[in-house]
Image (tube, rainbow, N blue to C red; front, side):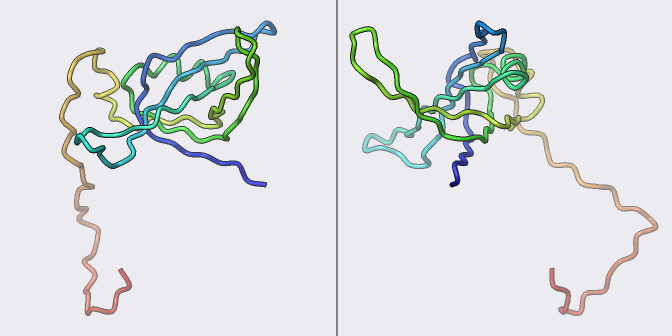
Length: 143
């Protein structure tokens, strides 16, 4: 069986860190993933995906990510059932994070909340070294 999911998007709100009765850390947060298309009114559409992270991952997310941060998560999709306060049975779907990664620039993540994101820096290229030799291309190189 295969149960793998990977999502990338922005945090919809600050992550929430809690402790279980046994002392394990658990963080819950929602990732807004753009669908890549617009609705009939020209507005972008997004999916709001609930994510749960445990132990060190939970603490990492709560320490380094905040509302609006770009994040990449891979893990597994989990469903669970529970009884609501009104007595009805409900099912919740959520991603259980195996790995969490930064996606934005360091400057973007260091910006105070509410401030506009700085422009992306120009790409840097390795300097030309004098001990490198030019390869003559006669059209037969595979790249």
